[in-house]
Each structure stands twice: as C-alpha cells, then as structure tokens.
Image (cartoon, rainbow, N blue to C red):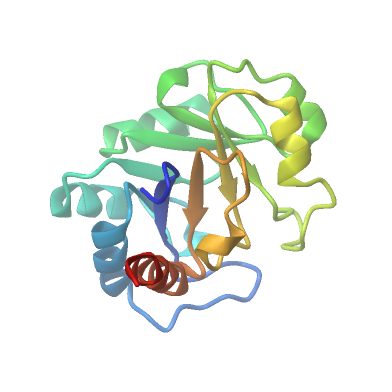
Length: 190
C-alpha cells in the first residue's frame, strides 16, 4: 500500500509489444511478493504466462493472486480460479461467473459506462490491440466510474499514480516503482 493506494505487483517476463525482462520469473516473483498487496501472474503465453504459474505462485505466497489475461470465456475464468487465483482479470466483458472475484478491464470509455459500480475495474492506458497509448485517459475514466478503479500501464514511479486511483497495477517498471517508494519514504523521514 502506498498512500492508501493498493499495489498490484505484476510478474511480467515479456509482452507481444517487444518487452522482455532481464529478470527471470522467479526473480520478479520475489520482488512482487515483497512489495505488492496483490501479485499479478499472467495466464496468457504471449506475456510469458500460464495457469501453472498461478499454481506455482499460490504455493509460494499467502498474498492474493490476480490471474492476468484476457479470459475471453467464463470457462477460462473458472480455470484460473480452480488453479488458485483469488482474482481474475477479464478484458472487454463482464463474466457471468465469479463477478465478485473479477477485475473488469473495459476496452474504451463507452464500455466503462456499462459496468456496474459494484464491480472492480482496471483502466489500462495501453491499447491492447497495438500496444500504444490510448487517447482516452484515466482522468476521463474516473469521471465516469465512481467505484473501485485501478490504474494500469505507464506507471514507473509513485509520481505517476493518478489522483483517484484505488490501486495501481505495475509490471514493466516494477523495480523502478519500488525504488521510488523507498526514495519517497526516505524523503519523508528527512
């Protein structure tokens, strides 16, 4: 937790947009386990993920696990929960099952308008179709959605946390983000 904002620490070894981590899954897991309130584990192979990694993480920690992936069907949501995930990210849809355990990622602001405020939402600033920044912003999303809202993508340091975020999902820059927390805490002490 940083200033009442939950930290979802993502284990990201690669992405289809050209990112490749210099750290192994195990090294990233250790960082995520030490720093995150929730640990995000990819289920999609394009991001180096699998359901087996959910099972592995569940053995290694007592912290909640978020299964991060598109999870296009309710069966995929069920499989993630059965593999040990406490939460499941679904992209572009609201599942029929485990709604209370899902974090919903709308593809755009129009989709966001149709999500009940009782559900948890992730606003990803990255367009998943091409890996580039969305034109729609977190600030616009926050004006529309009054419920629990997580900020995702382009979070490098604590200064990138947007006002109104209940949580931040940090992956690519997890190490830098954690260092910025330490630096911020040190500056508050001096």
